[in-house]
Image (tube, rainbow, N blue to C red; front, side, top):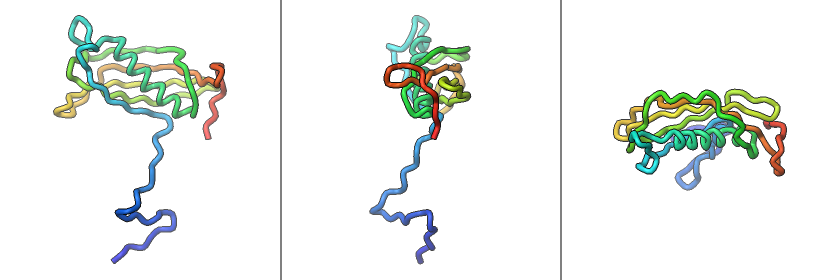
Length: 145
């Protein structure tokens, strides 16, 4: 027996794909492996590598939020809590936490993950500031639709 259709939901069959869900507009998630090239002399992830991944995740959240191009203006209070070692994965979660007229603050948490078990621990956290820019690279107002 077929269930009744609701007016807002089109029927789905094996031949028709499910409706596309939009991505979250003010956040971003990434997963990256740590390879030998990413290590410092202590055998842990080089700080610059981690900061680069944080900037990348934060910029994606900022671009989604302001629906346009951004530039990194500042890194604030980056704290390294735990070492990340070769073979670990790093899971990054970035979220816009404040919006001004042309700028945004984005919080980024980096978790070291053991892939075999899925265990995650907070390794690094920080806040990045981005400025929305126009095609000429000048600051532009953030307009959310």
